[in-house]
Image (cartoon, one colour):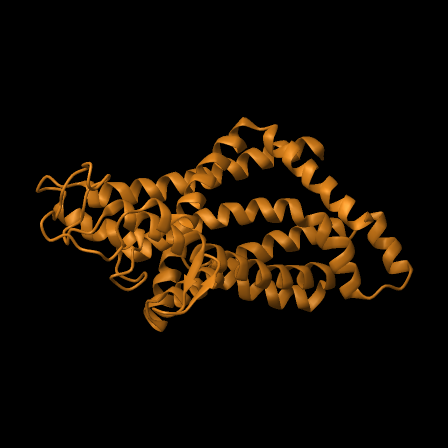
Length: 298
């Protein structure tokens, strides 16, 4: 019962911090909206994301198609909803095999695991471990982010799994630097020195003493990175290096829809652009609000 009570208390404390910030609440509402759209996409859409209505190509919003249609007569609301699934809920490995965890979220989680391991080792061990790890990561960070995305995806091909791989590789250096900085600070605390005096193993100290006390900044950074990953997915899709067609990738929808803006049909480009922008803004508001409130507890 004690672990359960501790967990309940931690959840209550986290919710109190969350709802103390109006900025965080606004961001949470936006994120929950898109998460709900992704989870209940089959229930809130009348058409499939690939279903075509040849009688109504490039149509504006109407009673039949709430947000209009694209150049092939596909319902834009359905494509937005199922596109949100790919970003937040499912990872399409193949056309028939999907894994839980959206493309952006999975990529960020992998980068968190890799970056946390490298940052913890570099920060705690120091010396040549620190020098080798951080110099390699600094070399990666010297390459512009978008260029690094393009190099990775162009080299290994455009697919959901490869986009996850690219997000993970690009995000790892930043996570590692953050975790290293936190580790350098925390390892000088009395409770860490006490654990070292007791003769605890390095892995025990890292997992039980350092990592739990660094989780706040890491979680906030992860929220921001999910926003960056969504923006990167949109950029890759816009450049033709995202998920292959006919997947309802928001970036690809913008790229294809912009061809019809000048002929009086901006809807296919407008809605996915707003979807990307709103979700990224929501994640940033949520992270900023939490960061502001957490700083008051330090």
